[in-house]
Amino acid sequence: MAKNKANKNEIDDTIGITSPKSDLPEWYSEVILKSGMAEYAPISGCMVIRPYGYEIWERIREHFDSLIKKSGHRNMYFPLFIPDRFLKKETEHFSGFKPEVAYIDKKETDEKGKTEKYALRPTSETIIYHSYAKWIRSWRDLPLLFNQWCNIVRWETKATKLFLRTREFLWQEGHTVHESDEEASKEVMLIVGYYKKVMENLLAIPVLVGKKTENEKFAGALYTTTLESLMPDGKALQMGTSHNLGQNFAIAFGIKFRDRDETEKYAWQTSWGISTRLIGALVMTHGDDKGLVLPPRIAPIQAVIVPIIFEKNKKEVLREAMRIKRVIDKFRVEVDDRDDYSAGWKFNEWELKGVPLRIEIGPRDIRNKEVVLVRRDNGKKIHVKMRNLKSITEKTLNEIQNNLFRKAKSFLESNTKVASNFNEFKKLLADKKMIKANWCGESSCEDEIKDKTTATIRLIPFEKENLKGKCVHCGKKAKYVVYFAKAY
Image 1 (tube, rainbow, N blue to C red):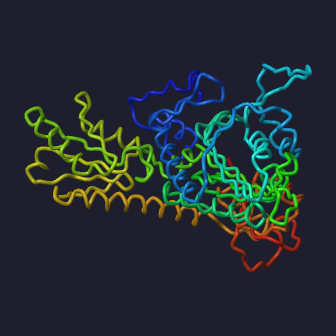
Image 2 (cartoon, one colour):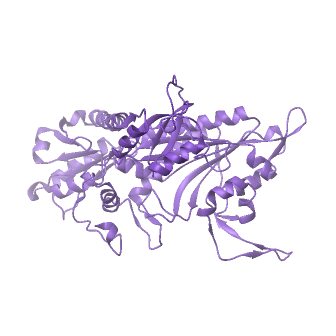
Image 3 (spheres, rainbow, N blue to C red):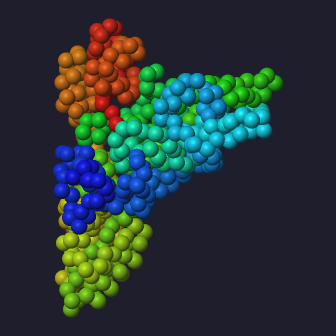
């Protein structure tokens, strides 16, 4: 098995997936490696993102980047190195990240002989806000709507899971500054809406949205909003977060502005981010025993044309395959014209890679002026006349996208159960369910549940419900309906 090898990348990529999806850890590693998405780096805890995986990240980036730019956000870039004294300025923030902060050995000495220690950014609030304090003078400078795409380093000690848990990963982090709490709160929810579009419309992954508890919020934030999904093993995956930072960092870093009434005030801030973790969610949510299943909107290749070649018809079939590619060139299409592999071998490889649509063309199809479309999501074959190919291809890709979302949503709904007491809670957790239950609102009770079960409150939903009954754990009067799960 891949994870037990001395070199985790030493996996036989000449055969298909050997682990069933029911063995999720083994299946997941095998799919990532064999599909060519990523591999383990020769550096502990790190990964190499190969082009097939990176193209998916590029599409996420392009989609989200277009959304935020339409609403006036702009991109910037800050250094990877963060002075230790910056990290320590906001106490709650520093204590929350301290276990994961990686420092470099080299230290700088200033003109006064003081040494400066540098961290590799675990997140960029502190170094960015040092500059914001210089850039902002008046209400006329607000709102400040900036974002950066970068890498992050967090010195994880747990087992490496490609895309899900690595010491270095890619993300975007938005950092905005506002005149009021109301404006900051609107920004938080605007980004939550954008994230939901990326996750549901692009990745076809349904999410639950709401607020984190005080225990689970971002270190230093006033409050944190979150988008959570449910994976096939019953664990929740935090897909993205958007934080109202209040004035905590503004006070720590001196981010002030002269208001319209000529008084000086501290600004209100937000930060928000999504990462390459989304690719891990994509793999787990849609994949099957054959490998990846990619939604068409995110797939690097939306359709692959596989010529069925016999020596005497080879030129004719290849010529027709290239013509078909030109007919449907509005889509991301490849022609697999390799000589050294059989059509059946190619079918299996493209299924492993999760390409949404396979187009088969052979001598008989040419005579009949048709092709065969094969859907990756359900394996159905469709005979399509050449004259209808463009419209049917578009229709079929849309159907695949919608079908994958429906399946994922059905899974989320059928695996989310209500627990009315703690015995039910523990049984549902053992059955790998997301649990909806009443909670008293006390952090001590939340901690006890976590200690007893390892489950955490994933979110307090935005939609308020008519609250009846007692806390699922302590029996006190309930204040919230929340969602519990074990998590990655």
